[in-house]
Amino acid sequence: MRSLLTLRTLSAPTAAGRTAMALPLISGLLLIPQAWLLADLLQGTVVDGFSVSLVGAPLVYLALLMLARVALGLGADVLAIASAEQTKSRLRSTLVESLFQKAPIWTASRSSGALSAALVDQVEALDGYLTRYMPAMVQAALLPVAIAVAVLPVDWFVALLFVITAPLIPVFMALVGWGAEAANRQQAAAQGRLSGYFADRLRGLVTLKLFGRDAAEIEQAGAASEALRKSTMGVMRIAFLSSAVLEFFAALGVAGVALYIGLSYLGLVNLRFSPFSLQAGLFCLLMAPEVYQPLRLLAAHYHDRATAKAAVAEIVAQFDGEAIVEASPVPVAAAAIALGTGLALHDVAVDAPDGRAVVRGASFALKPGEHIAIIGPSGSGKSTLLEALAGLRPYRGSVLLGDRELDDIPPEQLRDIIGMVGQRPLIFAGSIADNIGLGDRSADALRLNDAARRAQVSRFASLLPGGLNTPLGETGLGLSGGERQRVALARLYLRTPGLILLDEPTAHLDVETEQAVLDELMGFARNRAMVVVTHADAVAARMDRCFRLVDGQLLPMPVPKLPPAGRRSAA
Image (cartoon, rainbow, N blue to C red; front, side):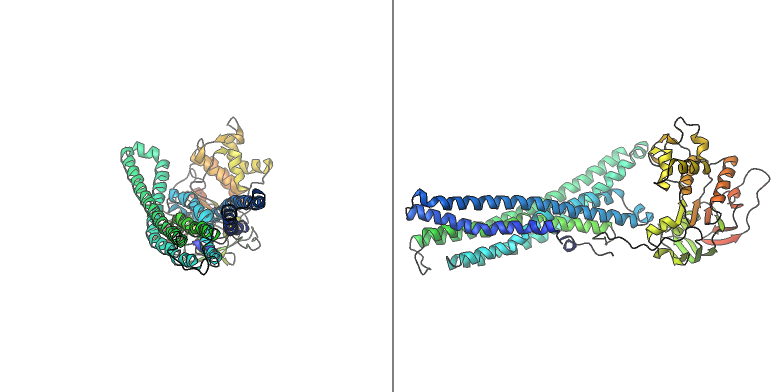
């Protein structure tokens, strides 16, 4: 289930988050009896002349209230941080899962740096909203009302001042917030551009240096950094402006209460039904700053909301406007029987990333145990069609795997049904055995050795000092193209796919090794459907049928006959 990612969907707090928002509210409510108790103590000692023994118990109560508020504040901070980390972790896991659900063509069409910035920087930008703004919003909505209600029995005019002046702060905060939100969007976009630019240029650093582009790229990086600096300073300028506006109106409110109480004590103003006692005046004065404090706190963290909205907008933009808010397991039907999966294409069309149609109207049916070869000139779209059959590219028309449409099969199940070896298989840093074991992580040494033997990996591994335990560099550094292809085939032999898709499986191999690889491959594919993209007659001659892809059309052709010796191109 996919739904639009918004701040509202992220605001659903966990149990810890709800407690974190409740504790500051309780602490603020405890401030009312604390202020009343303090005012009562001063009234008793200054006006009524109470002895030390009479004020001992109230002092203890006052100290307990202060300690309770400190403990509540500490607990609220700890729980807010824990809740925010849980929410961010869930969102990151969900976004990563969403990335894995995307086709490789989708990922390849986007800047890896920008995606990384969305997953790391933009998700982290939600921290202030979750830990500071949300608790402050709850306090600002409830505490001023509670304080005004508490002051009302003491002095109605002070309560009226609170009711009139307090709403001015959110009004001006909203006015300033419009500019803050736009500035934060610009800052988030600039940060994403710089992150993507830096990551992509770092990956191609050697190439840029070889082509003499280092000075130009340094200049462009400086320009991107300057754009981020300007947008960040714009955000800071608005944040300081909003704080100044809020402090100004809060100071006016406190000054108004202090002026009214002072004039009442001097007898110049008399709006009360009874004389203004020291306790009543002190209580109103103590409450005056506190009624604005939640609003000032909300204003101080209002830019956190604008930052979070900009971060969410950037995440949504990077993930095509949608993101899974909560990862939910995809129901996967019972796995199809690996042996006996047929393939049927009807009027299939596939486009290149630039929108150019490379395959048009392709149709054929492939029964279990039947093998076909697709040949054609380089760049004709053979690999593109193979990727579409693997569910890695979008297509138009109908592709039936067994009796189910390919697009309707969950990716988890597709990975079990389809075994694909591409033209450039990815080899990771690790031993040869580690790379073969990616086909089935539960495979023991016996199965690994058997897969290596069938793929003719043992031929070259036996000549290495460590055998299958020989370490490889990233992207297969240390292996030739043909050796990397054989390692990928060995991975395939650890699995039990129903459909096999191969792209130039014997490229870069000598004739003897090619024949040995094909012998094992045909034995493995005996009861499985198989589609092979190739230029080699030796491969095409082993297939049941052949198709030629020319100008987007998939045309049947005779299976080539092998010459008496050697091999020739089928393209």
